[in-house]
Length: 242
Image (cartoon, rainbow, N blue to C red; front, top):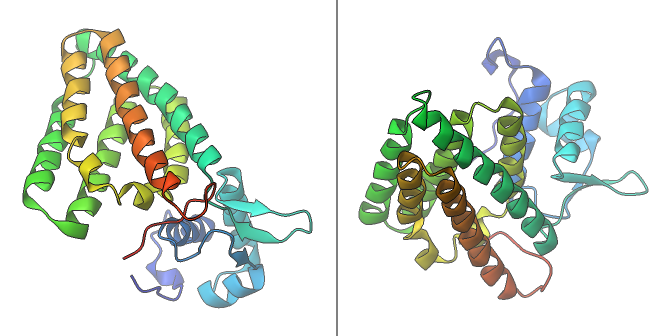
């Protein structure tokens, strides 16, 4: 994907320059165009993006808070490295949050205050992607729908703070997704695991729904860490590239 020079007229009325800069920089980091450990300078970004320093600093601050950018002792800014310890921490946090969300959604569905239709729709699309697509298109679509499934379920819990924290976790984890993409065998099980979660929700068993969600996320961590172990650098993960 090519980078277009910043154009203020292309921004929607409700989108500030700082939020645009945040989205653009986070996308570059996630896609590996700003590689782990790469030095970042305000001067270079001002020139490249065409945005002023103030909104850029706001965007950088947000990225620091999410752990995507780190500030060294000499104030140098760098893209955060991909580390197995961080990955495990992020996935464990996600396991707790999404387990809680699955429990709460089960309760709400039983009360008639939520339903599972959107979740089933996504699962159907996942199965189509697994069976009909191949190669990079298949991988990209499965990750896209998997992310959508989890975001939809968490949103259905109605817990606003959990939704916000989860969104930050998902953004931080997105950098690691291409490591998992190297394990094509892992991807074929995603819709089956999602079905187990929704089946438990519809059965009105919150504990089973929470267990199914936690197990699903743990299986994902196994795939990530298996690929990490095969990396040339034992404690550093690098995005897989064609």
